Picture 1 (tube, each protein chain N blue to C red):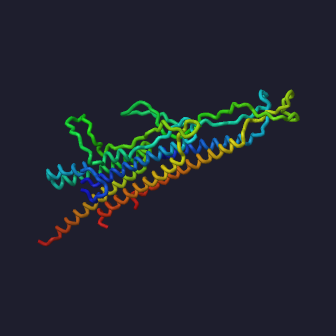
Picture 2 (picture 1 turned 45 degrees about the vertical axis):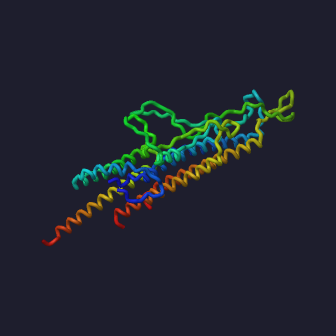
Picture 3 (picture 1 turned 135 degrees about the horizontal axis):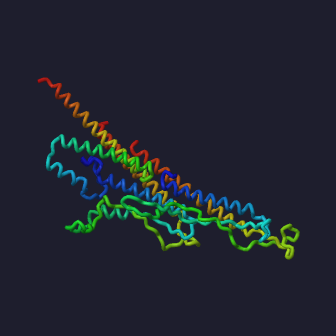
Length: 150
Length: 99
Length: 133
């Protein structure tokens, strides 16, 4: 339970971006994981991508203003982790155990190293920006506590 | 009772200053004034307590509101205590006077 | 005895409220910097405050309780969250400008700290006057 809404907002962003970074790491780790499409014993690894969405919190009100409404500005959440449906990268390796017996091509995941590295930078930048926001909120709260002390 | 000048900002005449005048026009007794002042002190403390509880339950998210209310309650209480001390002092001084 | 009803104190407290709200809005913008379709929001407060403090505006005659006054009294000035729908920054309809938001964050933090310092000093001064030392 976040003590302040602002901490919760920044925390949600840290979680989401950390998850994205984990997915990218997973993609990079499996960049050479060959598979045979349609074969359950050797499933083809597919690039995993998170879907970000704004987090809205449905709040029930009672008392003077009864009813419910969506509170805005609650941060970000990962709606789902979807798999890239693109076609796999085919490489001609007739000696590979998972090669297609007819064509000699092996199916590799469609993961582009450059794209994933760019995403690493984007995710890290977003993570750092939200850490700064969190620190700013904490600093403000600490200053507020000092109001009577000066 | 505006203690400090507010020169840099162009401020409106101030509803706060206006509300004090009707009271003085009727010139209530000292006892009534004291009672009103103590009610204010009590109200400030109650407000501070309520804000603290609301903060703990998460209803109020802004820390500065709680801190400012606590500080206001502290100031008003401090003022009331000082006034009491002065009254007691002056009473003792008067009772010490040789007739 | 309206010790703490000074208009400046009210203005400072409203400034604090607006700064806290701005912090949340900016944090939300930063959190959703990669969310497709997200439109950033900002807080409008200074204009409202200036209008309320502008004593040069001609007051309208209000003879009925339901007449709307032309000037907003200070107690009713409130910050407004405005959503910016028209612009686009990235390929996925997201319009958050990270650099701008970081600058807003820094400026807002300073404004908050300045206001707390101002309130703290005023209250400390009152305390000094009350105690006589």
